[in-house]
Image (cartoon, rainbow, N blue to C red; front, side, top):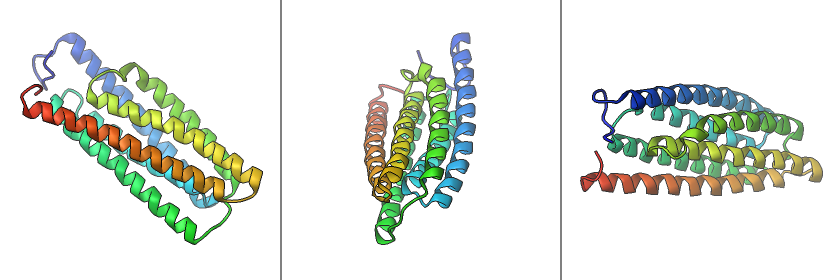
Length: 211
């Protein structure tokens, strides 16, 4: 089926695209709210892992906005946007690495109470987003890359909650930094997967296999 924009769409395709737009708007708003909450908590608690999650949520909100803009566009356009999404994830990884470096030079023990409360609230919101996006996970590259970001959010939420538990159990800041490093590796892996998929789609479009 041709993935054209604007004309020649069957009623089923138009209905699917309308559903995709609605779910993308909803998860974008959820991520923006979660981002604001986690930013406040990370500044209050001094947690690197919470700040990593904040950057992840902000990147996801931008990802959902970009995905919303290309619903119904050509597969080539979606591949280009997916490429940009991968670069956003990579940018989040760089920001996390910078934060880890700063914390290594300025060690401290985060407030585990604020960490834990924010992590659990964020995990619940991420679970809602993943549930909303799961029906579209095997769709085109646009929705598949969005689902990939949302799945990462679940791992991030669990990891930050474990970091809060570690800070409480050991009375030290190293569990927070350890989780921040793990999230850095997760971001790098996700960026690689999204970028590789987008590049493959772009190469296929150059050979005339998709439009």
